[in-house]
Image 1 (spheres, rainbow, N blue to C red):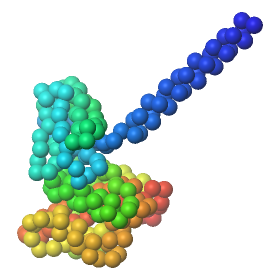
Image 2 (image 1 turned 180 degrees about the horizontal axis):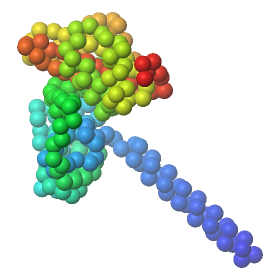
Image 3 (image 1 turned 180 degrees about the vertical axis):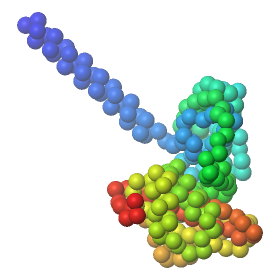
Image 4 (image 1 turned 60 degrees about the vertical axis):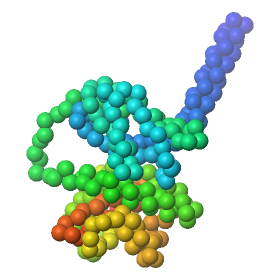
Length: 254
């Protein structure tokens, strides 16, 4: 009898724990605002990382629990986290409706710069323009009844790597190789546009894709779940790439 009571008690405790975990997971999944960091949740002293906040197209208030560790700055219409000192800080985002979301950023010591033959600095070039492109693309997707895309670091790096090559037409093998080298494991769709001038680059790029049926279909493809974009401006010409990831598909050059 005692053994049976212990078994029943253990079963009830396990059920209660499972219910508690389910409630916690559901609450996290249902957080009204999504908050992410382009460079992830771990930064080094001196680093800056753009904050990825969704849904896009909304005005937000952003604050840090410890500005001496991680400060937040507004750059045009975007928010940037600035790693000041070692430690952790919670970045909280809220809107006028009282909804909120948060991310904890941990800052480690700065590391000396290493030269490995790659222009790694270029992978974070033109971040304001690139973030605006993503906002406009997600705005277009919402207007056409499909979900917004989350930012994927590997696709961001692959798209920037391709735009830095200043292609004026698609190079499929090289684009696929760039995605593979950046660490994206699946197939993807991509758009390219090139135009003279550097002003209003994000809007011009997205407008070009909206006005081209094939590019537009790639931009609003419901099968896609993540995005990366690249922008390079050289001698008064702007080169823009958009990579959209298609989960569980195949990159035939990988």
